[in-house]
Image (cartoon, rainbow, N blue to C red; front, side, top):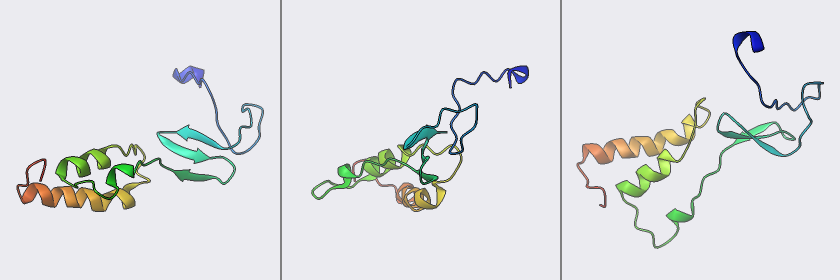
Amino acid sequence: MSEGCFNLKGWESNVECKYTSRNFGDTSVLGVIWNLDENTLKCKIDLEILSCGTKVNKRLIMSTVQKLYDPIGVLTPASLLPKLIIQDLWKSHFSWDE
């Protein structure tokens, strides 16, 4: 890896080998949370802002959707519908606080 100027500062794996320190639980990989024990990917979303009494408007929907960091596209199925809603809001000429 050093020949290609890739300076690794840490290596995570769910398989033991001489290059890793076997960690347990969650670790962050490319902006997504990887559970090493269950070998699953997940993301952290704060949905408390969408609780009862909160006025849902274009600003809130846009803010919530843009908090999803998904560089490898694993969350695309979950983030597609809110993005389509935002597209419809723009086409309908709603203001930011409507």
